[in-house]
Image (cartoon, rainbow over all chains, first blue to last red; front, side, top):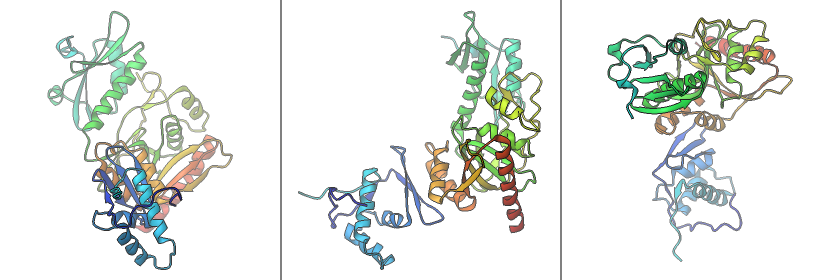
Length: 102
Length: 292
């Protein structure tokens, strides 16, 4: 969950996976990430794994949110959930997320 | 400083460790017998097999200290033979593991169940009781693939036998001695603190379960299934391959967690825990046999 004080990523930014991070999909749809430089591990639930897959530098946050909403149409908190996942990924330095222009 | 390779031309222990010839020069006869004993699980090697690699050397200096050399580099200096043997074995295995990129290394023990149907991996940090549990399961008919270094074939996901001597401290020995059918500790020439099983698992077997000992203070032993993501993190935490072969470690972990359940073991008294785990593995083994 995104902390209320945390700056939200602009919906027009396109987050990108750090190329030093390896990800492996697990049998239950969750995913494990390994940062080869920091040697940190991170696990993602299936929803977060879906977000991760779309972090290709091409999909904007808004586009990722739309894609995830298409998979989980009945979930009303998709936007917040996606922002929370992106925040966690960025906090663990698994992601490149350009700063919004001031 | 001159390395030992120029000083010693004989009195060498030669073994094949994971397919590579290893030579250890040990000038002192008593020390050499101890080295031969702790490395006795590894097959003999010829001088020709070991010629391509810089030799190790373990020697007692006039100062009373033991020195371990790897080629021309002194890697360890110890005050006791026991510590020198530990250092030698650690160095040999560490050097071996550094070369491996075709198998997954996990820190833990692996055993074949008594029926020879499945293998069980026991993962954990040093001191958590892996060796104690392994010895207790062996007393119930399990056969070891390894006590400390699991080498998994990434294709078949099966552990391979790694016949390294067990390190058995006094606490472990006392616990295992209290079992109804403890092992025969008396292996000729084996230094204190080491144990070499009389039999090993032999043929590889698919992994039936991964066990992660968590505690030993439960009156009634308990196995708690870990969710797949937690199982994967646990396996990777005990992976020796993650740093130098991360893609292999991740893929192997994903496949292993898809095929073998991973349990946290909340153990109690050793005999009760071994019996409990033995019965649980027997059930897994029967299910596996029925499946095939």
